[in-house]
Length: 379
Image (tube, rainbow, N blue to C red):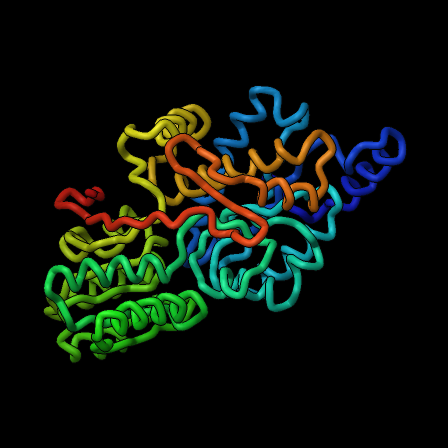
């Protein structure tokens, strides 16, 4: 994976090719990806990159798209908002970057909208790893979501909790755009059912300092706790809450990796945790897209394991590749945006994704899985 430091010569070469042969910037279709490869979300960022890479590699192995190879260029933002903005600006300054793929973080991507970075660049961002409402409403034409939003996930979890007869629900959340989006989702879902939050406690972004949140929520005597948090703070909360004698049913939003939670918190502390999911179960082989994902993972990334994160981004890569195909042999950023929004009922192999000129939420699928007695997820 190439870094973006030395892109000056590449850009110059691309412009020379343009003037000589009338090519659209370069022979390669360059996809820019900003991902958290260091910091608290590093394991998730790695899986995000892998999910896209195995599909792009498979497309390149069969001749590419309209004769052009896909080049996935990945840079690390460490899950830091300022770095996401800076690196995205640098990517979009390059004429050979045709589209963006798989960024992470509600606050990070929201800042790109706030500062007009995506609008100025005119490139599609496909399959960001976030369900934040601020990226969906008000409508913006640049982001093509593959996943349902956090509001839908929160509603699904609250529905399950209340169906089980639990009425005292607390929320532990990351104190930023991501966590607050989930918190609002839970509050709205409870209001719909004439219930109020038992407690809400935040923790500081890019830390796993959750001691205060554990105290506040333990004191509320909640029957269920919905966590809107990433791997390390989720694991820290589960461990500290259980070790302090907390017995509430634990739930978490889809962005966590259960294997990482088991590793960090210990199985006894996360056994029985419910985790909402926005793509189908990737561990079975019931859907063609799951079988394809598993086969390509084994072929192109044999040391990696099946998980929800890489599978979600694999589906996102399929969506992006279809958009590139539809954009024709000399794609531009604008053509890719138009091609993506023409994708009505696109079947990725058992998962259908739909966009239109007025809709950018490709799927609204949600289900809840549970961490089983062996640490594996069960449906």
